[in-house]
Length: 138
Image (cartoon, rainbow, N blue to C red; front, side, top):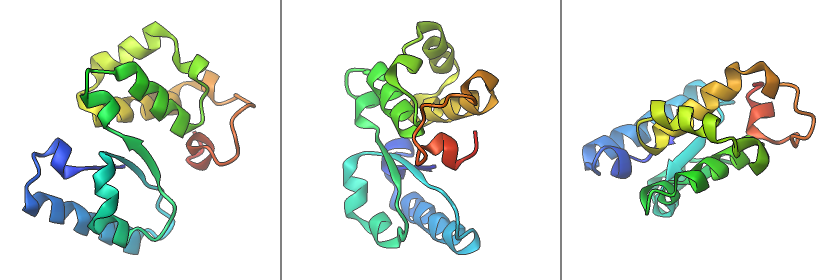
């Protein structure tokens, strides 16, 4: 997961360049790496787009940051992971994730970890083959 430095770290040029360098190093070292971007749409217009050689999955951080539309964010991330909205509509599940999360990327990490650890989600036959959950063998 790539967390946009301009959102999470305040936009320092040095931090952003270090993040881009890290992405390049990871791609060279691990050619089969799978990437999920959490950012504003403008990140795809810059240097990151130039170094991305593979298809990426993308979640717009704006749905979290503007008017605290966390449910829209949860649904968007869940969709990127291959889950139906109805599966993520459980208020208790969402509340636990958000209680433990710190911002949008924290919520995303918490979602992925919870889905990975929860055995009842592993046997869902309705996920498309290309879903992140299947790609990452959750």
